[in-house]
Image 1 (cartoon, helix red, strand yellow):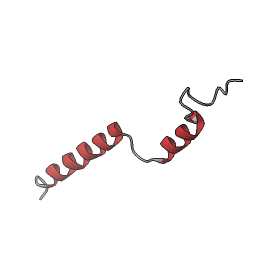
Image 2: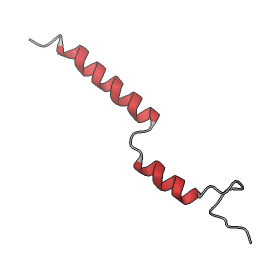
Image 3: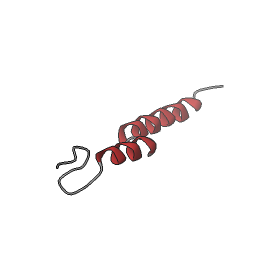
Length: 48
């Protein structure tokens, strides 16, 4: 009997999904956040 929630090697797919959801920012989210922070910092030099 094949368990559809596990890969051929035995990895629990649902557990991986749960852990990924709890892991924090994705690469693209982190990259966007850093870009926004850099833009805000560079704009502070133009304020009086």
